[in-house]
Image 1 (tube, rainbow, N blue to C red):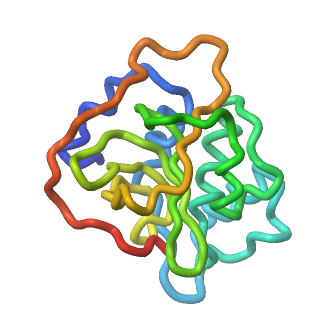
Image 2: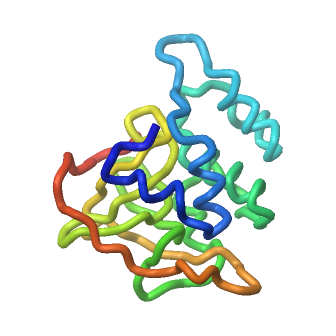
Amino acid sequence: MLPAAYAWLVNEPGPKMLIEMLKIYGTLETPGSRDNPTILAWAKEIGVEKDYVHDSIPWCGLAMGVVAKRAGKEFPKTPLWALSWAEFGTKQPHPMLGDVLVFKRDGGGHVTLYVGEDESAYHCIGGNQSDQVNVTRIGKSRLYAARRAPMTVPPANLRVVHLSGSGKLSTNEA
């Protein structure tokens, strides 16, 4: 269940990738040597099961790949590598609801979807954020790329969303 501050998202009619990410909200990585079969099934669904064999492997790109596929979008050839999403869709000067955000972090990158922003952070829904699909705040200074999925007709609710700046700021989504 979405936190109260983000409950409004369930009434949003699009973009398609946001709708698909909301459907997998709450999916958790299994701690220890066991794996969440749902996350491993995503790897098979998008054809990366040979490269993705344990849910302890960073899976933000995997989650993004599965929501892109389910939304009818082509995803990068190497979807598991977060930074490869910087070539997805079209570049955006300022992200809006449902846009793909790619961030730099120590050791690599992170890919997630925009749900809003405050003065210092983007509020993002995505996978492998504290080992689950959830909404987290990520500093604007870490943004590497903002991309919009290919769309024939943009949804009417495509917009910048201003939110409260409360809550913990994520520093490393690995």
